[in-house]
Length: 301
Length: 301
Image 1 (cartoon, rainbow over the protein chains, first blue to last red):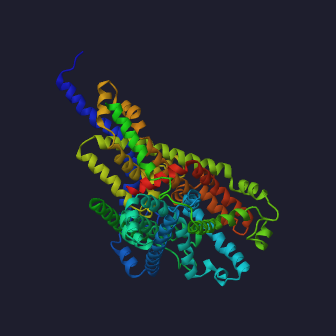
Image 2: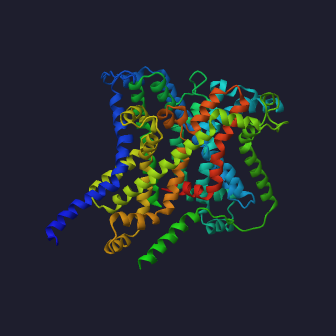
Image 3: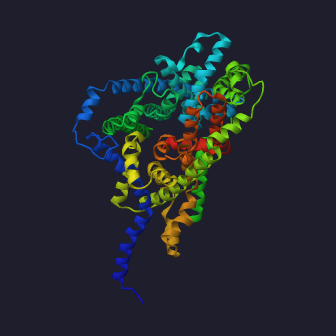
């Protein structure tokens, strides 16, 4: 039986969308159900007083937002501590990562094994890292303090707001330094050697070469690492939960943990959702700026 | 002509990441005294980086009394019994299998469905493809904390709560953005002519994808699997919200609750902590090259 051209055409018209749906459908379905629907539901809940337990929920308009922005001291404190943490952790992680990369692109023999060592903490998730450091701050420091007599180690690190903050920063550097190091190493190796040789012949010292050749050449990687670490730090949760759980007295409770506590501990799902929306807006602004700057640099380069 | 083209593409694919991992010296030159000093500093820094691991591992072999009196030195008596007790108490065999099953299953779903989706999105020149791709990419901006509150509700309606299967589907939803994005970018380097030739030879759409396109995607598939594995294996928050039964718990969950429960029994808690880290280290030393490659190529995107 031969098909008329018209029937073939109709069959083709049907076949294309069908195979499109078959290939794209499963991923889209999971994506819509797991990401999109909850995302928009969350925005809706942020205008309600839902407590998550009872089915009852009332529209309360902008009340949640008003409360967060003008009354919730803890949210403001969390926002501030998160911003402070982000600034400190980003600067220090990148400095450490970059210095390690400089060190490990020099012609030393233990280079490869040391790269592995510095990268290793990164494999382990923030939750377990937090527990490891809890052990260090509570038992290890105590022992080092007793051995050396240095008062720095004899402080109750996790029991004081100031030191607990730095405690989380140290873990962030220990974890993130190796990751950005890998990116910086890749960038440093792509700096043309003849450029450096030429500068050397012209009498430039190491510092000048670093300032005028290496740094400008690896600028794109610096942008990437900066924003990568900004987004890690701003969204920090696991380490925060397992190391200090926001303590002492909520002094280290950062935004993600604050949202978590508001929703799942205090059962204020509506209020938690409103916080989550604000959190999303800030994270989105950071990420969009990052993509914009990276693309812009790519065009210029 | 086509096979030649494929070979050329494969050569390029192999070459690009290898440039990021050059092991040969940057600048040739003698090993000077100054370099020896640098090496010494680097090794000392490396040892400093390993100190937390040292404390955790060494103390996991001590009795509880010895942990209190002799924290920093090697154990006087090496106790392996901490491990057998922690293994039992954590139900480690079960927990390990849970983590393995979830990571493997989620990876399978992600690779399968996102590669299929990305292929059709690249090959179908239609505004719908553009819109869908944009949605996948845009949603990467959404932080998990902005979705988690309604997610629990949505997934209970869908029957995804408290099951490994449900958790895998959620990972497909969350992982689809970055994976579709990476496949999409890579797919553009595969010439369409090969696929057209196969269709003329009588190959079905299904056959073209699995026999011709999918094998060519191998390099990016390896990268995607590694990035997703590290994320899923270490993930704490999502499984802690989704899995209610103790028998379903993954390694980070079991370590967290175990440590919380045995916090005064450092001997068992530390052994449990080491058990939680070991699989990652084994994975890392097996896949080191691929992991570093994945990070450098993933970050440059």
